[in-house]
Length: 260
Ligand code: CIR
Image (cartoon, rainbow, N blue to C red):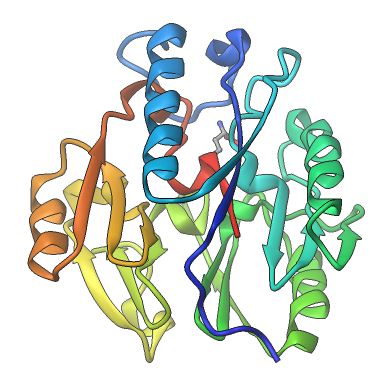
């Protein structure tokens, strides 16, 4: 049986490489990525996780892999079971090796995905006993089948959510504890997530729908006042971080760590 939702105590992160300006992006940034500022924003992100009591496992930057700071995409790690993914983007596939090595130290079982299956961790959202998984340009049906084969035996219900024009499921929705989510309006139909409670981020604040909730604390991007007020009104303590440079590489809150 899967564990009830537990507050994470550890975070795996990876420093931003100097090559970060070559990360994949679908945004056409209005200005080039300021890599030094991105590194500063990443340090603030890591410091915030640490200030909330998490033990940080920081992997060294990998210069030859510009997207490698987005560790979330390389593994799904729940209840000490690790599924090492086959990232959908070819240029990201070599990122998994060092994550597998570090997770092997914490996991009771490690499964490695192989082609033709592909899956990015950013498409997987655990909410209590359910794992929602985006069927996306990065995650295919074979990847979802392997996710099910790995986690259904632990008692998780795996629910696929077809996506169009959305990079990853968690670009538009993220968990707020074990029976509640934050969802960007006008993206995925709310009924897909029944019976969870939903807090909505307005469509124009879609980027803010990707947040990290740890107990009563929520880490979200700065500059999204409506979503921030809604979360505060719900009683969360909000930590708003400047993510301007990380966003230019299509990165956000959840993708920069593996929490467990
Ligand atoms: C990519 O396109 O793969 C990266 N530039 C961004 C990945 C962001 N990952 C995530 O949201 N889980």
